[in-house]
Image (cartoon, rainbow, N blue to C red; front, side, top):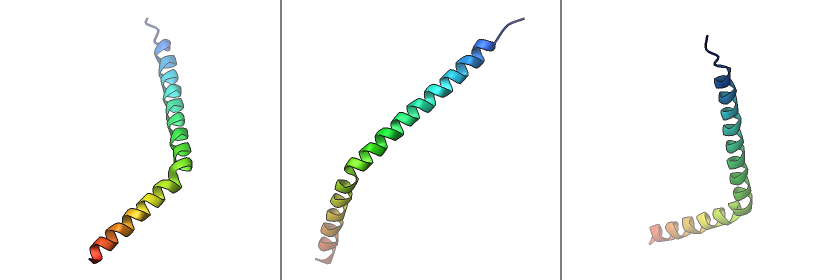
Amino acid sequence: MLNFNWIKRHKGQGMVEYILIVAVVVGIVFVAYKSLGKKVKNKFEIATKVIQKADKE
């Protein structure tokens, strides 16, 4: 009879690696948002004002 226990162990390992990768990506996005969030928001507000001004003309 064949023993497939190694497959179960590798599936669990793959899931843990996937979760770790997702956690690292979420961490990077959070840090980027915290450091660049206000700058990006200000740029969008400036662009909105320019578009509204151009629309009135």
